[in-house]
Amino acid sequence: MKRVLDVVLATVLLLLLSPLLALVATAILLTLGRPVLFRQVRPGRYGQPFVLYKFRTMREPLPGENPWTSDDARSTRLGRLLRRTSVDELPELLQVLSGRMSLVGPRPLVMAYLPRYRDDHARRHEVRPGITGLAQVSGRRSLTLGQRLDLDVRYVDEWSLGLDLRILLRTLAEPFRRGEIRGQSLAEIDDVGLLPPALEEVR
Image (cartoon, rainbow, N blue to C red; front, top):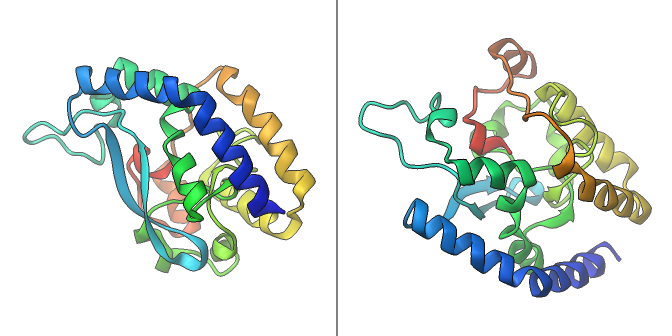
């Protein structure tokens, strides 16, 4: 039933949002140029790699600019709007149709994290990664990275179709909440055994 829900809703959303997708792609092309999409290999179910697609929200690093610490400087005004409203995630609907992702599940982080997860946190890969998830509707703007990983494992343990539907409904209100996404301090990242990420890579 989860897969049926994914396919039906992703198809409907792609049809309804196709004008918005075309408008955003055109705006990125005019303001940032090519490529329109941000591509990165992420771990899917059971840690199997796949290529994640999102709308691009940052310019390329300038010579001598550290890509790991220059997210704010490289984010465009359009990019900040896309991220605040989560519109940058919409291309992932195609990956839901392909079976690489689900509408609801733990957000896919970066491949470099795989060998560094604690055993309990590694269980987040027992399900398909999602466009939205329990952590995203439970205050992701104020949660530490460890708390987000704990919520991912809780989702795996407590999954039900009803839980997915509740998360989807709460996701609709998430772009209207005020505040920026909370960054992680080095102390928090060390606490869960992970390397410091670039902001765009962990959303």
